[in-house]
Amino acid sequence: MLLRAAALALGIAELLAPRRITDLWVGLATRGEAEAKSWVYTAARIEGALLVLWALKGLTSGASDTDTPSDS
Image 1 (tube, rainbow, N blue to C red):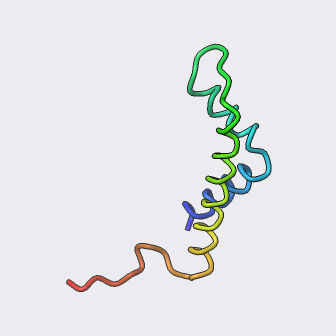
Image 2 (image 1 turned 180 degrees about the horizontal axis):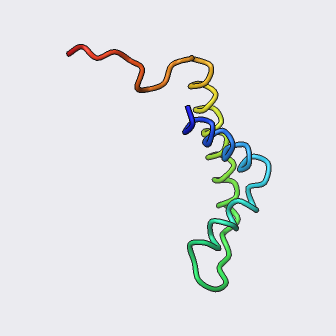
Image 3 (image 1 turned 60 degrees about the horizontal axis):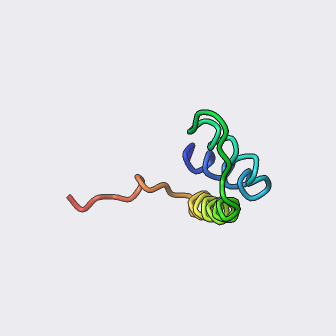
């Protein structure tokens, strides 16, 4: 549940401000000046949308991935 909540928060942030989030990660990953290509911001938005969809699907189903019973 906590992982889905974190994914939801990150996904919303990437949808609303992909440039800020991407620049933050690029700054942490590199030393000195580095600039992301323009397509990276579009990819960040797509990633954000997928994270939001995954998180909402899990939160609305009411079950986590570990709640499924095993056959053993």
